[in-house]
Amino acid sequence: MALNPQYEAIGKGFVQQYYALFDDPNQRASLANMYNVESSFMTFEGTQLQGSVKIMEKLNSLRFQKINRIITDVDSQPMFDGGVLINVLGRLQTDEDLSHAYVQTFVLKPIEGSFFVQHDIFR
Image 1 (tube, rainbow, N blue to C red):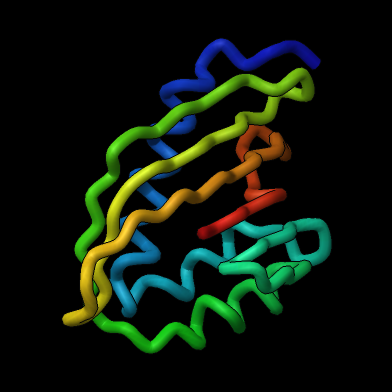
Image 2 (cartoon, rainbow, N blue to C red):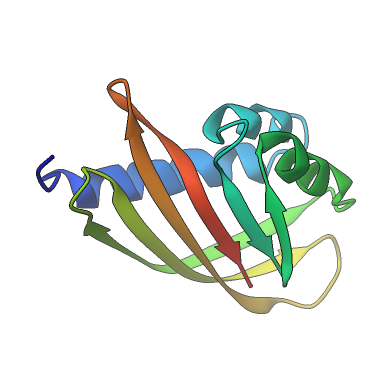
């Protein structure tokens, strides 16, 4: 499979869609559709999870209701299997907590004309 020439647009579009769902507590459960039941991996603040069920258990356990997010930069690279590597740098504030920096890295893998999140690392 060749490098995907649309990798930058895919990366920016994915980040916009992902955070729109994540940042809305009423929509967060929809993120399950972005992960694979068995082959998705997430490392969330050092905790490693495998599969969409475990990943969603973690995301649904987050108790904050409000998120203020500022994305500083989104860097994307094409992968040789047609996937996209995405690195997000930004700041976020949950509820009334102090704002802090974060970095999140995604690996999108192609599947049937679309993508799923195979790897997700959040710090």
